[in-house]
Length: 138
Image (cartoon, rainbow, N blue to C red; front, top):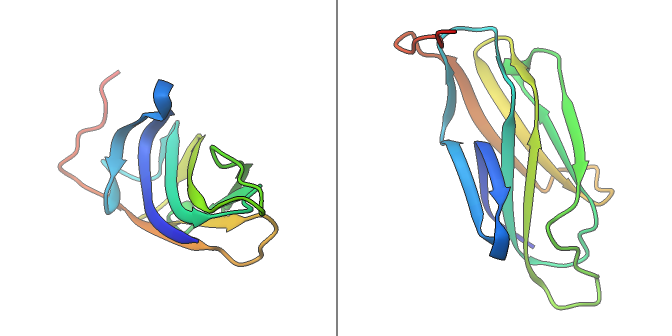
């Protein structure tokens, strides 16, 4: 199995016809006007090639930007592929929140399949303060 892409965004939707809509993509960093701060929702999308036998996906989110917190969530790929069938691509789309960021640092998104104790992939983003951003007005 081969990892093709991981995208972290504000929202991910699988539309009719299996089209994908991604909103507010985070490329290298998540920027805040100040920390600590909270995001009410964060979305995770991954695509894997040449897969077979994936029945369960566990996403573990951790890192220095979260302090001591670790978030774990369990899901399924968009299609479950039996072990005896032909290999094919799999998409994973998960949304979670709220998520509290306590300081500047890193956040890791670790992907585990089935009952594996080792992640199949780790995606890292930086979390930092950008003083030029203005807090939202309420």
